[in-house]
Image (cartoon, rainbow, N blue to C red; front, side, top):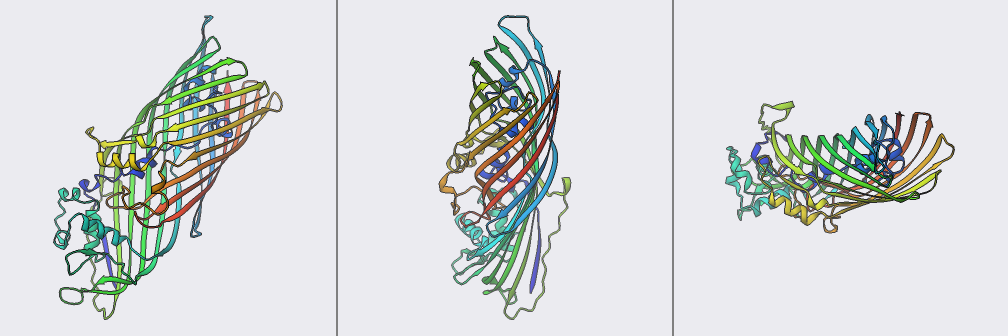
Length: 527
């Protein structure tokens, strides 16, 4: 058996389209149900209710409801469970503080302008923590996909055999760097007609295995100003600064029988059949800072009815990616005798990564409409609708130029996302309240991309793996206790999410299901 170990140095130019690929920027733009326990226990259906520290991030007009000051902190325990269609189940537990805030309120001596309020809040709007793994039978190979891309780009063996990794060549094809690595690892071979072929042929069969470990968060720090006009119109504006960190490890390997492999035991080589096993390991660390604006209003035409509307601008991010990719190869053929090894050792840079790339992202616009019915002083029911223009995501270089090809694929492959929320609260006693809610979020991915992946999916040039959500839903409940100025709220949140994993465009991939449970506690004081 011959073993090849390759350490892959990621040159900056080769990263041109990496973090800007469709599903990468989509992932970095997403948010989740998060905030105070009261907000989460009603599934976030709070756009027309207001008067809650995290709800004012959804509809800033909710700050106008306040008539006293408020300070609160929320902590939660997350029980994560992910299962692939092949039956592999991974679990994890995380603890964090996901919301801290203060709201100040000042009464105005006016018949029209009743209150002026302000707030300072921290909220974890998204958590990337997720691990999943699986394996499935294959009759083709990632190397065939790479070879096809190289053939389409006009590459040949002379191009791929060079050791001069000139950054300019990385713009000529959608997978040249991975192609160079695969060719020099004997995963891609030349044919008699001058084309390139991968490991899989008519008789090839085998299994693919994958493992993905993602960590990180998106945190938002907000300043909100608002007020109360005649106890009928409540308004607010919000400025937010975001901090994003995404840390990802991705493994993909294949074990193939009757593979087309290169026999370098003979002069000039020859393609023969045998066993081939290889794996790619990709490390990515993404960091970013951004800013956004939100504005909203709540109108109360009568005491029993509240109407809410809010608008969120995109978050404008400055991003930095750090990369490291490695590959290992095992080849076994008839009459094999040599034991050669190939090694290219390179020095790592910042935080142990080989190289970095900087770029910009503009996340989607968001629009929200809400209605809350308050039939009695003991309870309410609220409905929210949110429109997210996922196909309006934009990305570009740090100099302000747009990546037009990637943006065209975003428009083609993504669609508007719709979120429906419903929540209710019932006051059992003056001190104790019960709450429940439900939320459903549609997929931002168009139907023609789902299922068996479309071959034109925009992917990273050195890492073909991508994943997207098919749907997302939350079932929530909770309770609240009030005593004078003190309050404590508890929430339980069950998140059920169905996603699709693909090792590369054009292969079946595998369905991934999350069933995550969160228990949260909020402690607050109004004065």
